[in-house]
Image (cartoon, rainbow, N blue to C red; front, top):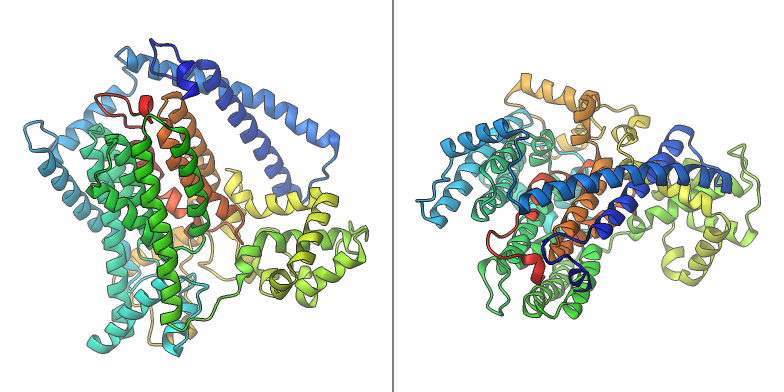
Length: 597
């Protein structure tokens, strides 16, 4: 590759100016986005004047360049020392302790057979994770029936199906519910078994990734930290027992990505398929079945793979193999979704979910420029034909329900017929309004997605406060008890004190009071964390692994176009980041993937 030809022959690292440029740009964008997100978070609106824009951009570039430059300097020092095998005593005592713990509980001795060591690590990790997660299972027995559960149980008991929620997940839920009724005379028992199986599948995903870390000779201390994270990260507890498709998707996503990383780690430039190829393909396929928006990220990912394959001559066979597996999986997933749709006689769900961002942008622009008299800032400058289209699209003045943080209040009163069958008019109005009121469109985007972009945003933790309902914060544990109890579903905690403790943590968003440690929990950290990881991969010249980051960021882009900042949406990237980072940064002990990939 071009970048590699410019690298000093004595160094395995990226040419310094390129590494510094990436982190300076990343630092500048990070500071700029945080500054404007902070303004819209605090003031509710931004007047996009030239003075305002430059007043934010110039300091952001200066501060971002400083942050990025220092970050690059530190990274190059660290990795240069590694190349020279220089001793680095920092936190050495922590590493020694963790290594001893790892050797005490797991198999890290060179004398053991590699496969045996890997399998013992996998099995012991699974047992320890399940032991830790059994606590929330007892507390929330039979599980947390929040999010989409009431709607899905409505489909199950009333005998209809809508593909707005993944059909595969609804069918799995129906299987366990009906089994509980048939064999135990209780839907509640069926749900409890479902929760236990879901918990085991997620634990298997984490333990599989941890076992693969052993297989890749990741440092014992790093493996122990990853295991402790899997066992005790609070969101793992809540999501493991929450009845939502996102938990299944997280498990499948983690296994698929882990296998892809190992394929690149092995760097086997041959056509022969291996078990990791099968694992990669099968779990990508399952991910398509359990998360509707993943299809769009997957389609973009195929384009990335095509570009890599066409431009990478040295490892053409490896990338052709990966690209072909991915393409076959994408086609198979699309066919399976179509078959499930027909087999279940499902109705097509309203596509308004994919229109969340335009809905917010139309509503906000109408309030500021439509002459509707709701906001004092309304200047009434919008063209009549655009107002007419918006009034057809957002029924009964639904723009008056506009909530900057949450698209559902307006979205639930949307006539998607306008977007589907008057597409030309819709696009013409959208592009025209975007050109004329660019600032309002940008403000709508920033306000809705501040939780994903700004680490100090806390609106994500209070999305449902307007309803005055407890347990509907960032960690949702709220049951629609009147609806669910009528279907034989009810709370039946087996550990009341723990239930109360966990409910208080969830309801009060306790993590926001953890000082610097809150950044382990807030969603606004993780898009930047993955971009930082991409920079480290660049510096180390592991270019092939950027395909993994591309898939992750493409999924994140679908979230940015979604209706709300929600834990369950970002959890597949949040709950897996430490493990993905640890194994992504692991280089093969002999040879360098980056030289060939």
